[in-house]
Amino acid sequence: MNRSTTPRRPRPFTTAVAALSAGALLAAGIPATAGAAERAAPATMTPPAASPPSSPVTSVLQVDAPVPDIDWQPCDDAEGYDCAEIQVPSDYDRPHGRTTTIAVTRLPATDPESRIGSALVNFGGPGGPGLDNLHAVGEVMVDPEVRARFDLVSFDPRGVGQSDPVTCFRDAEREAEYFAGLPTAPITRAEERRAVAGFARIAAGCQVISGDRLSTASTANVARDMDVLRQALGDDQLTYIGYSYGTILGATYSALFPDRVRALVLDGTIDPVAWSGTGSEDPIATRLGQAEAATETFAEFNRLCAEAGPGACPLAALGDPAAVTEEVLTTLREGPVEVPDGEGGTVPFTYGEMLAVSFQAMYGTAAWPQLSQLFAQVAVAAGIGEQPPSARSHGPSLDDLLRELGVVEDYPSLGNALAAQCMDAAEPLRLWQYPAYVDDLDAEFPHFGRFRGWTGAGCAPMILRDEDAYTGPWGQTTQAPVMVIGTRYDPATPYHFTEPYADHYDDARVMTVEGWGHTTLGVSTCADAAIARYLVDIEADDGVTCEQDVAPFAPVEQRSDRADLRAQVVPPGGWGL
Image 1: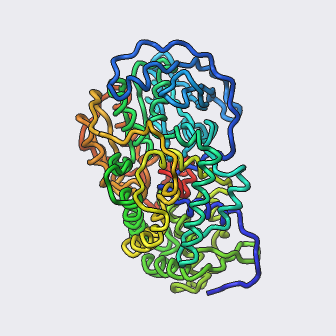
Image 2: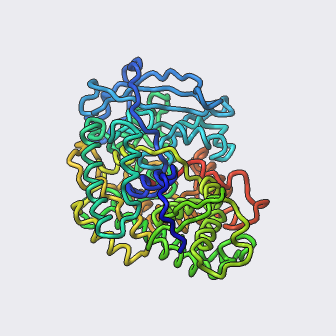
Image 3: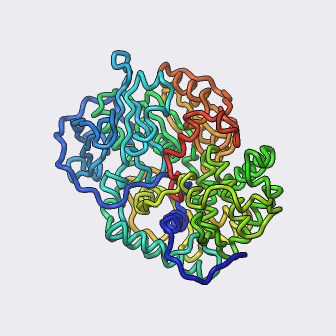
């Protein structure tokens, strides 16, 4: 193993991945904008329109909430999109009291004369920004028929991005500096003690600095915000597309407002019973099953790499990919490997970084060739595998590979991701119990058990609670049919959640995508067409199966313009779904 004793300043990537991995809250999700947002002047309020009868759960909390006028203006940095801010109640028990800001954006329908209404979109998280992500993919994320008939609308949920974000440090720089000193994937007892102390400090900071925002950040309140937004948009009922954690938001909305649902597309589902964890003795990392799902998907990465061969998957040139990747991870677990930086020097690459990048790359198969190249480069640097003569002289630099894999240097705000999860989900473990629990999970699911096992640690020390959080019952009374979608090999929302999620609804039409990655975004034109038919005509067949358009490791010329769409919604890093 090539090690260096010369001190080096931390790379921005190292700091970012340390933040992402040490937090390890949920699935690799969408970083949110850090820093506190200034509160805008309250929007003009108008009396609420007459609403259909509400369920007993929602009558007190929602019916009296004022409905804001939306003053749409062209977005400063997204041509063709409109932006606005609205004010909603901070606490729906006091609908005329203090307000919080919700930042909203829309992409108008291309055929206004045939417009059906607005389709609200949540890209996942928790902690994922709606504005940035809709701006990145809105024009190509759905079938042209959907683009023609609907305004696509998204928003930064309360506590996220430009919507009065939950923050845990005085500023983003202090947060980044703090995470730079935490172990990425704690292994030794000393590292585990540092992680436990770190999570305790983070939880304290979140509650002190953002206590008011945190204590009203439950998914139930986001659902109530979404219902206010629905009314402000002029829609009698909600049309909604929710990915990953967005399926929890969808299930919560339909539980609170069953008579206000027109259509729900629920893609990459999480069973809400597992999410809320009421009555369960299992930590959220076990309940979500991500260690198992990531292990299964990684096995598919290795299998398909071997089938593709060295021409399409560089890792295969070093031997059996499964054997090489296991040796690489085992070697990195013992200590960093010095990898050429492309400029004549080397940089240390760590176990935690490799796990974080691997988990992120599994979100979409477009990045699998680059992930194979990264494993090959680290293997060559560590002297692992068959070492073909050309191994050291070809290929992109480490930094280039990391850029191609979508890892960015901008630091996501931890508080954005903590907000909804900590207010929603039961966490039965005490913080001091996590090291032993993670060791056991790592033994059952090597590597990814250790990476995902700390998922609930940021919430374990929390004292604050949102009294309005909704944790069930989850039996739905929605009359409209809903569309539930699962991808066969999804590292973040296991496929086995699909049927249990659908079973909560009387009329769920289930579609399976036979493919790899997290959600169907940009993956299958077959799935896009089925979603379009459902959204436009409220028609969908149950039990439909669609194939992925482009196989993993396919030649570049076979890849579509939408093959990396999921990567544009990320970087998925270590927070959220």
